[in-house]
Image 1 (cartoon, chains in turn cyan, green):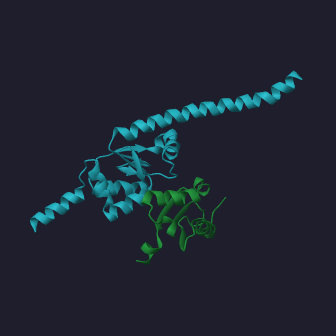
Image 2 (cartoon, chains in turn orange, red; image 1 turned 45 degrees about the horizontal axis):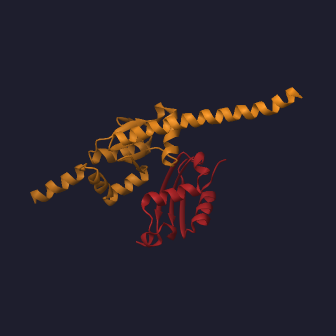
Image 3 (cartoon, rainbow over the protein chains, first blue to last red; image 1 turned 30 degrees about the horizontal axis):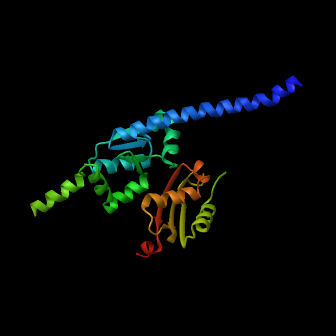
Length: 145
Length: 81
């Protein structure tokens, strides 16, 4: 009887334990991401590094940032599995890359591309005190004309 | 589970009352890379991020295995232009 109870209770206990450690791990990752995205005006979570992106979508975001000459901090999710999954949970967004401005999730590659095309990106950057290089170029063109 | 263009098109059309959906499998058939265009008035008044999140939420299960996903979410009016 005793062993029967043990057999039926032990797996339950074991499962609970796993759930609670996972919960703590998730909490720590969330806190870490919180700090990362609040530490810099613009943060990009990507595959690879800006000089060597390891995914076409990440590369596209890097190119957009370069065009606007945006200073940003990048994080390579391929070098940290916790962050790779954690960032998806954090922003409730299923894919990488992910862009944060002023601590807020802005979007992935599609959204950045569309914001770039519509001019919205220039405005968003302006709000956090970053002047897009495209804006500077436009202004100097007008002055010249 | 390997998803097909037809499956995704049907699901998006149904769940989002879409009047037009285009789905392209960019993966050469392995089903892990898709581009979609969704035209629906459910996007009316919603900013870009909310629209994309709406599409993602419909494909929540599927996106666990689809690892590259590109989307355009337009209202009927935007699409006609």
